[in-house]
Image (cartoon, rainbow, N blue to C red):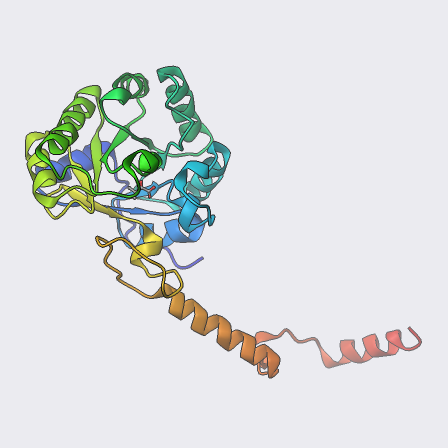
Length: 292
Ligand code: KIV
């Protein structure tokens, strides 16, 4: 599974993130949905790994994030936790697992800690989530808020639409941000909000904001790993805010096609990929198989 680095980095904690924020150091966050994607994100030195419910669409092929089940999220969280040595880990509460009551939210958050082995949780929503956040934070589970475009509610927004584009809508995002800070969130994801609105909200808060499609004035950034590494077939539509830093799809395709061709042409496996046996043992084996 690779050689561990000579100087493994220190575990990122809530105090580490607070220190980065105080010092003006941008916080890096990325999604991971399984053991290998968490392994590589942790090795790359990102501060926070999020098991986002984007899992539903990019890893499980579902129509939207509302389809993924709590048990499915927990299975993926556990695999991410096993691979993550230093980054702070956060699990995303899936739709239907936290909105009914603060008690339901707390029960689910506890499952993310105990069964999912996550260090913190994220949930979508603004002022209406305050009592649930207070309840979760009250027992010592760190909560990352998520405001602006909240994909679990996409059908209410009429799709994945930018939020905060009018004065009233921007005020609503700010009010949500202030309420979530007051409720005890340690940071907030701000998704698909004009850059100037997200920057102003960031200035008005004492906790960090993590932007996704919210410009460069946030305290940190998050992207979906599958999107930013280019691990998808050509032609798939990705949001405007995604920068594609790699082309994992074409590298995987090249490797798998080469393997297919070498198996068909019997170039693979070559002698260096095979185990041998003492000649004498083989001759005795041949003898023993006579008549079989
Ligand atoms: O589900 C997810 O991956 C997310 C991030 C995009 C913030 O919520």
